[in-house]
Length: 121
Image (cartoon, rainbow, N blue to C red; front, side, top):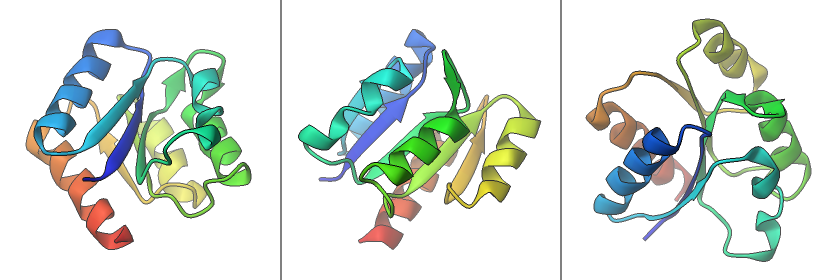
């Protein structure tokens, strides 16, 4: 079982993504605010991050930079957003392994997560 951390400030979407990934057999932590993510070093380490690019207080790109500098240099990260320009920034940043545009098909999200978890194994 793989650990996936989902960061999104939209409660309904966060819940859907967490339930979907849990039903696929993953251990999932849903986090609604980026400040809560930075304390993850003490607990079980995620095998993958799904990070929304529009978060309160910082962008998903900023959060990914912080995570890379503070204990997660090689953990796969997938950017999610409804903004094409933010996804383009994420894709060209070198911080994310992939991007998923909102709204997404459930199979698309699951396939992307599984692909990168398999690549990391």
